[in-house]
View 1 (spheres, rainbow, N blue to C red):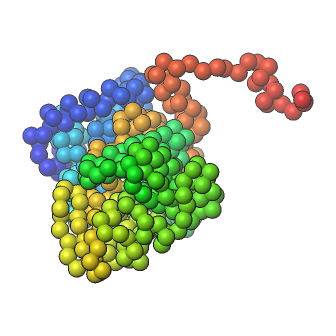
View 2 (view 1 turned 90 degrees about the horizontal axis):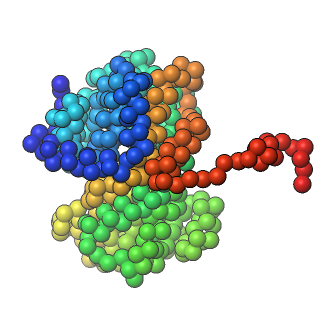
View 3 (view 1 turned 60 degrees about the horizontal axis):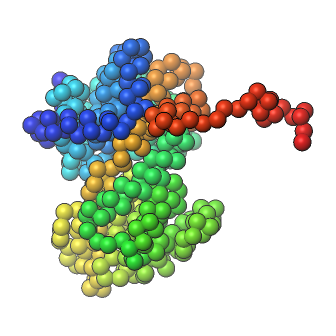
Length: 418
C-alpha cells in the first residue's frame, strides 16, 4: 500500500483521538452499522481530498465499512493532524497522502497520488482534486461516476465549471444541505475560528473591535461567537441583503476601508479573493491581528502585504509579525490559511457528524443515481437531509410532533380555505 505521512509512530495516539471524536458522532456511527451489513459501496474507489482530522477519519472508516476503497489526501497544507493520518494508515490500512505543513509541490503531489488510484467517486473540500482531475488527468474522467463537495468555496468553483460546461460529471453540493451549512458553517466555524485565534494569540477578545468580512453562514457564526466573547463586532459585506441582515442582528456594518482603521481583530470568511488588500493593511492600527477562516488563503492579499513589509518574523507559533513601511506591525495568523485548522483542531465532532453523514449518504446515492444525472452541481436530496436531522434528534433524545391527517390535508390542498 502506497502512502505518504509524517510518522507511523504517531498511530496509537491518533487512534485514541479518533475514538474520542467518534463518541460524539452518533449519526455517522448508525450509518456505519448499516453500511457494514449492506455494503452499498462495495468495490467503489473513492478519491477524497478533505481535511485530515479525527472527524474525517470517522468518515473514511464509514466509507470503508460500506465496501469502498478510499484514498485520502489533505485539502489544505496546514489542516492535517499527523497522528490521525498515521492511525488511518497503520490501523485501518487506508492510503493517506498528507503531512501538516507540506509545501505547494508536495500538496499537489498528494492530489496526484489520489488520482493515480483512478477514483470512481471524488469527495472534495475546495475543489482542488476536481480541478486537477479536469486539467491534468482528463483521461481518468470517463471512469468517474460522480462526486461530492464539502465547502462553499468549492461549490462556487464547481458551479463556475458547470456554467462553462466543462464539468465532466455530476457533483452533489454537500455544503448546501441544511444539516450542513446551518450547523457546520454557523456553529462549527463560529466556535472553531475563535478557538484558533485565541490559541494562536492568547489575546482577550472582550472589549476589542472584531471585524468579520462576509456575513454568510460562516460569517454569522464567527460574528455570533465574537459577540459572545464580548467584542464589538463590525461586519463588512458586498451583498445588500446580507448587510441588512447583519444590521438587524445588531452588528455595525461598514466598508472594509473604514473598518480597517478601527479593528483589533480581522477575520475573512467570504470565499472570494483579496478581501483584505494593501490599502487596508496600511490603514490598520499597530498590532492588528489578521486571520482567515475561508477555505483558501487568497482572501488575504499576502503578495501585496509582502511588498509593503520591511521586516517579518515568527513571534510565536502560527503568528507572523509584519513590520510595514509605515512602521506599524500587523500580525497574520496561520499563514492566512484556515485558522480553525491551522492553529486549532477544526470543528467539534458533534457538528461534523451531520456534515459527514451527508458525505457518506451522498456517496451511496451517487452509486445508484449518477447515471441519471447531468454534469451539473446538485443539492443534497431533501429526504437525505431530513433523515440526517431525524437521526441527530433521536441521538439527542429529542422528540418532535407529527402532522395529524387533518393538518397534512390542509397543507396540501386549497379547497379548505380559512
